[in-house]
Length: 276
Image (cartoon, rainbow, N blue to C red; front, side, top):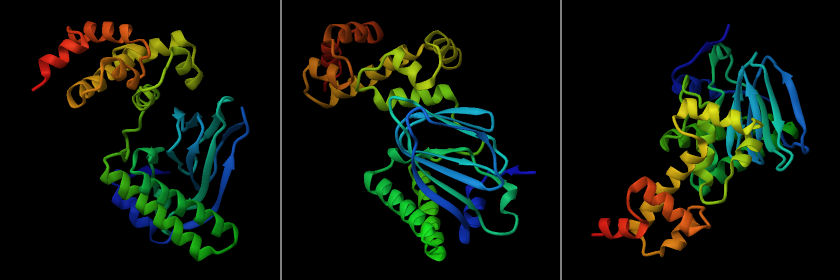
């Protein structure tokens, strides 16, 4: 029986000598899905491109580029790709050090490497790809070393940047939608886009999101755009129409109207009030 580990340090100790079983880089075909299955080893998936959904141990997640997931032994999991953007992922099957390694459980969602500085993300991707290449050449020791460096660096970088997901604090579907909105606020987003992203009916999506987050998804997007625009109003001399475009609002009149509705002042008057 697997027991949850609450300390990443305990799990890191088990990577002194991992067993690298298999690794490969995969391009999922459009609309290709991997049916639900399980196995008796750990599997890590790094999604470096595309969008989709992954279900692990009864929980569903929206997959975005940069995401890292780990399936623990016995976790039932499946992957579904979206037809508009096929998924590219690097899959690694592994076991930590010998002994009681399998007594611990990784959080299924680890974090997103795309939120790290560009050089750190590229370093991690490079080591992971090389580990897969060397493993498939039967260069066992080198593949283990590269994977170990990748894994320890990944945890260290994510933890230092406060992006490491803690055990027991895995993001749910609605939090992942919110994360998507915050990352893509500067481009047009519709409810239909979110529906396609999640595979949920728009009305059901709105209901579930509002129940948990206390606000409909498009209203949450608007509020985030307003927060970003306030920073631009204070810290730059950009004209209002340029700020509107930068936060994803092509219609400056509609942007100003929503800004005033939330803040009580037009963007121009708000800027004058808060300028030093």
